[in-house]
Each structure stands twice: as structure tokens, then as C-alpha cells.
Image (cartoon, rainbow, N blue to C red; front, top):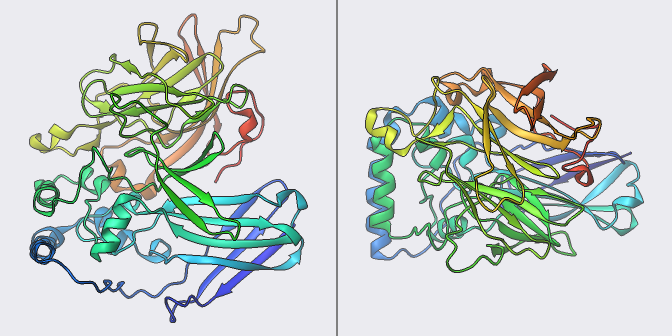
Length: 460
């Protein structure tokens, strides 16, 4: 075991003392990233604005100050959401870490630990939810001679670059808008689309790439489910470089605008499996990416009716893919009925959908009711070889408890239990078993065991 301690005074912020303590074990890496930062609001970068930008910004300032910010609930108020340990941090260029205890295992040489998460470039204007921030990657690169280099960089998305050049936050914060029952926020978004003329989701995307890091076909990607991935790389000196938005060589006729932040890779075949959900039919689309990194034909799933579910994760085994149609729904038209776009539907019964992983359509897909199951993440899934008939799918997932109408407004009271779910593919029966009653999530396994039976999960 080795303990590293990093203490620097970044040249871009003389008053900022940035400290990071990193403890590294041979079998597991853990970062305790302590952020100490001035609580003053970040200044706006100086630049020469065009008359168009000057007029729009004045209007946007007026709307945010006198119409939007006057009555924000705490769960979408930037002053509340970005307080304490959640206050934004600045970029940190590649910085050598000092080994103060022990030594780094030589097996780590040439590798890197990379963490992704939301971190707004500017203090938000208007409503903001913790998941709305720009993607920031923190990495530790292990080089020769037992050395380690720490670096923090924003993912250079279209949103990030445009706001950086403008000098102020321009793009809407979608999650905050979706969980707020206010037409005012929708009007502000439309104003930014129409008056600003800077956003075109069909060509440039609006995502923040702030959710996960995905390694596939020899490349690294920063992911978010509202956009396409952004390819990234770690340079020899430990810097994090954004290469650009990536569509896995999809065809021009393929309206491929977004995908899950949690695709699954089969280490045996080299393939990746993924999906995307939409607010218009088909609400769910399943697809495969071949070992060469080329996206294959979509499989549209039409058996979800009414409104789309918030589908954050799914499971893939040797023969099947499993989806959850949960109680958390996305209904853009709901705001016209006084409801939130992203909300809990207490009348809905969750159900699991099973489809062959190489299906060409959804004709063989079936659904089974699973009351009370609103899974957040799938740790792993496999087909039980101990079962003589090989008809059982086993999933280990985190389940949100309880699912209340005000779930998103009361995050601190939300509990995530760990469950083992067994699906009989012949009888379509589902058996559920609580593995842990502790509130835990963000599980990780040895990727070689993805889709295969495994024993150990690392969770927080």
C-alpha cells in the first residue's frame, strides 16, 4: 500500500489551496478528494461581446434575476445545491504526487484511475440540480519509477466550449427544469433557443458528459445519457484531452443522438450493448456495437405505452438483455396539466422486460410485473449455470426505497438497498432477495466478469 499526498497552489487562483489525499491498495483504488475552495462567486471571463450577445445577455439577466430566481425551491437552488463539498472546483493541470508512505505496486505502471462527475464551469443562473453540472474528469496516471500524476479537466463538450467563449452559463439545466413544476423555466429555455440561436441538439448535442467513463474498442469515452459520448485520452504527461463527440460510425440515416451512460461490454466477444430512451415512440431503443466500434441496427421496442420511463441502467447476459419500466417517468406534456416532467407515478406498477440480446425486433420480448422495484444501477447479471435447465437470469441491482412522489426533492431520505433478482425465462416468474439493507450504490466489479457469475462487488 502507498499513500500519496498532493498539495499545490494553482497559478490560476492564488487564494485557492487545493488538497487531495489518495490512498492506493493493490486490489482497489479509492480517492478521497477533499475540495477546499473560496466561496466567492466565480468571475466572468472578459471578452468582447457582439451586439447580439450583449442584448441577449441583458434579457437573460433580467429573466433570471427578477422572474426565475425569486422563488427557487432548495432542491433546485444553486446556492443550496452547490454548497459545502459540492462547491465547484477549478481545473488542475498534470501535477506530480508525492509518495509519503509505502510504494506503488508495479502492476499499476502505465495505467490510470479516472473519475467522472458534475462540476459546473460557472455558477448557474436559474434552477440547478446536482446532476446538471459540466463533466469533470479527475485522473491519477501511474508512470514508471513508482510515480503518479494527478489531473482534473473539464470534458470539452459543445456546451462547455460555447459557455467558456461567451463567459457565462447559457445552456438550460435539464434535470432542474424537469423536476420543477414551472412554465417559467420552459419559457427561459425557449428564449435561449430562439433569441440566442446557439443551441442545435440535432447537430451539436447539449450533454455535459458528466456521468461515467466507458472503455471500449481501445478508446475511452465520457458518458451521459442525454447525448452521445465524448472520446477522451490520457496523454503521456498525465493530461486529460477531449478528442470530440463520437457516434460509433453510425449511418447518416440513423437518428443517433444519445445513448445510456452505462453500456455493457462482453469481454469474450468484444461487443458492447447499449440503449437509449426517448420522449416520443419508440420510447426505448436497443442496439449493439461490434468489436470494431461500429454501431449496428437499432431494435425499436414498442411495448412501452403512454409515457417513457427514466431508464438509467439495464442488464445484459450471455443470451438476454433486461430492462426496467419503472415508476419514475418523463412526460413533457405533464407540465400542461400542472405536473412535473420528471416525476414518480404512484399508480404505475414497475415491470421487467426480457429480450434476446441478438434480437432483430421486439417480437420475442416479454414483461413481468415487479411491484416496488425501481432499480438505479445494475451491478452485474448472468445466467445461472447451477440451474440444470439454464433458464434463470440472475441480477444484482440497487433499488430505490421508498419511491415517494417527492423523491427528487428529498434525496437525503432516499435509501438504496442491494437486491438479487432471479428471473425464470420459461415460467416468467421473478424471485427477489435482499442482499444488504445498508444504503449503498455505485457498484463495480472486475470487468472480465461482466455478464458472468461473480462473487465480489465494490460499492460505496
